[in-house]
Length: 124
Image (cartoon, rainbow, N blue to C red; front, side):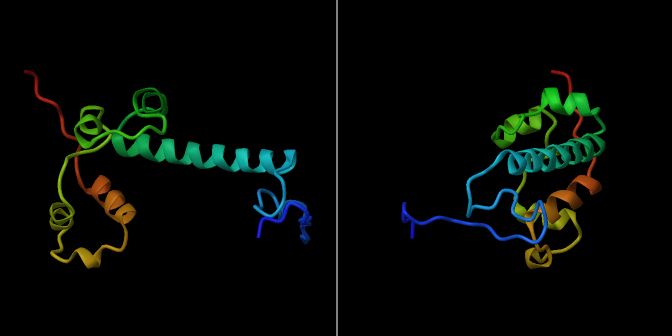
């Protein structure tokens, strides 16, 4: 399949239709289009997260993982999540006993975020 003598040519009906295609080398136009889309999605994600967490966009940008993953206890400490629990516990909190009623974990996350209050750490 990866014949070094094969020449890939892209045929597209509009200027940006082939931007970022895996069937041709990434050119500057394609790179710029992808970077613009990523920046827009990133801003949308940060704004949504900041609103759900009752924080500023700057606080999310500076205080969260910048794409890094954390174990649950660290994510809780950083106020990135409301609680640590099992899928069954989350589903029960959402008012159903049937995990199959929830289609995706992203749906669970959105509903759980909208339905729960952030945990306020108690002083030691």
